[in-house]
Length: 325
Ligand SMILES: NC(=O)c1ccc[n+]([C@@H]2O[C@H](COP(=O)([O-])OP(=O)(O)OC[C@H]3O[C@@H](n4cnc5c(N)ncnc54)[C@H](OP(=O)(O)O)[C@@H]3O)[C@@H](O)[C@H]2O)c1
Image 1 (spheres, rainbow, N blue to C red):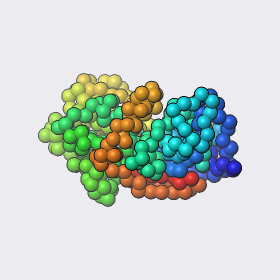
Image 2 (cartoon, rainbow, N blue to C red):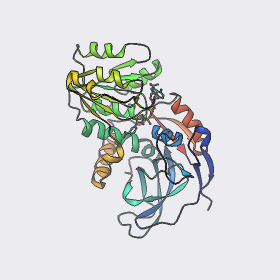
Image 3 (cartoon, protein in one colour):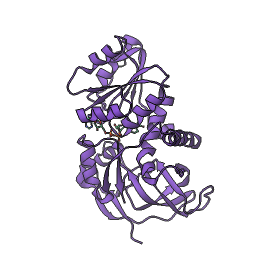
């Protein structure tokens, strides 16, 4: 059967995404063949497409997040059956495809209470929220924290999860509509950061103290000011670069409050199988008990991935975005 995929042959703008035939290669030890039902769009896909992050073995499809059905088991695979519903958020890139070969130890079973579309919308963004809020910096009840891009894919999940943890949430957003959306998902203090002195606002909200943690995925345009929002011994969790990579950082910027800086990745926080399973289970729990509602606010045909990239990079999307194969 013909297998179609969105491939890149070389890095570049959204126009390098090509809808073309890409056969599924033979399964090796530990592999499964997954037929995708929904594919998640993530900002990291744009870094891989543009060349900001290197993708090996071109041409190939990009994409790291999807849900689907197990079609075939390779040698040595146990614990999964043909017909199981599974989802993943992991390299190797290749989720932008109708079907693919995938290491079995990188997928998890999707519970009955979660649809394929929901799984594809949350695996990467939701497990990221899980490790950021519970493991990189453990958010405790009563804390006031700053989360940038609060109306985005990771942002809307994080706002709700922070609320469930008992935190007060300050979130930055680009427009009034996004401010309303973030507020409806638990963001107590949405700030339109292109229009106001947001460091000043964070200080006002925290009675001059600052916040114990800033979750910063915007990068270039926010990082220096994020440090200024910290309380004594606070931490900047720099986990993305939607506005571009940060300028080189002089460690001396951390001296005024003996601050901490970390640059974490989901791939390291889910590298061990037990961490992956625990993270996915915690995510399915907060979704299952209604603490986190999933917002799939954009859907595109997989073949239209280039337009999805334009919209994501153009700050036109909110919540999660799906590509439908
Ligand atoms: N390290 C990790 O483990 C990890 C895992 C997942 C995601 N991430 C990172 O988390 C971030 C969010 O990912 P996502 O997929 O959920 O994307 P997203 O937040 O839905 O989209 C990015 C948002 O960033 C904001 N932004 C501010 N300045 C921007 C600019 N100059 N260009 C583009 N966007 C800008 C926009 O919101 P406003 O218009 O409201 O400002 C935009 O909607 C990304 O940086 C991603 O790389 C990191």
